[in-house]
Length: 129
Image 1 (tube, rainbow, N blue to C red):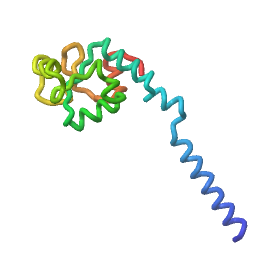
Image 2 (image 1 turned 180 degrees about the vertical axis):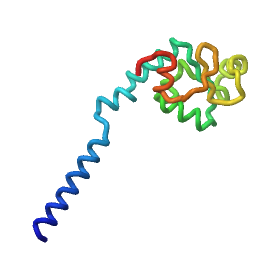
Image 3 (image 1 turned 30 degrees about the vertical axis):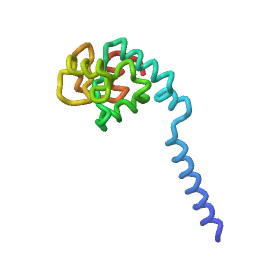
Image 4 (image 1 turned 90 degrees about the horizontal axis):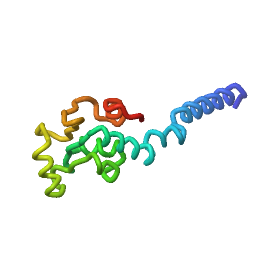
């Protein structure tokens, strides 16, 4: 092969590697968004600001929301299981839920209808994320 073709191939590989590398978040950046400590702090802040999620295990949107917040174990303080939960949880759903769909997010007892990603929820109640 001539030197020009090798130089072009090398350039393409270098540019491709640079694009790939730039697209990968740094460890610290990723940890800030999804790390257990940061997510636990967010969940605590959401709980302190009276955010409650009413959901059901069969609901894909509920599962996506819970997973975006770190999983069912992580959201225990703000999540109420309305289908397979304890009798106390199911009763709480019957008494407190204001709509007939899940996930239902309430903030200070009012139904929240905005985006339900962690950043939007944090912003809505004034939590840092």
